[in-house]
Image (cartoon, rainbow, N blue to C red; front, side, top):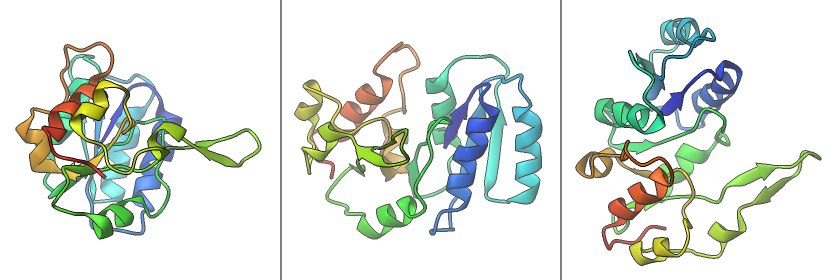
Length: 184
């Protein structure tokens, strides 16, 4: 799922990174938070071109948490992951998660890669320090980052993201998701 608001060019890059995944059996859910920059027209055309794309247009601007929750509620697949509209996936991200899924964990995550000005990448060192994260680890730092790969049911069971939280919504969601189970 991809929440978006008035970032058409970045959204296009994010969507293409999902459409170009090596793993093809997926749905792409975009929730637009009342954009005024041509996003709606883009989504309409995109859904005609690619049947994997579904989109929702909100009637009231209400933030990313509400957008994420709309996507979670409407997701049909067994697994789910999110992507912010200003980020993008490397081409084998979904395949990696599918191939490495383990029912012993509530979710999977990978290191974040940051593209530097010289076109090289660096990783998020905090995440690299931990192989398995448990709920109490999140009381010290968000070792997971801003997205996970998990079963859709798990996010539905915890009611997704709390729209009343102004910051740290992802951390709070992961804390609730772990519920004393580890994540790798």
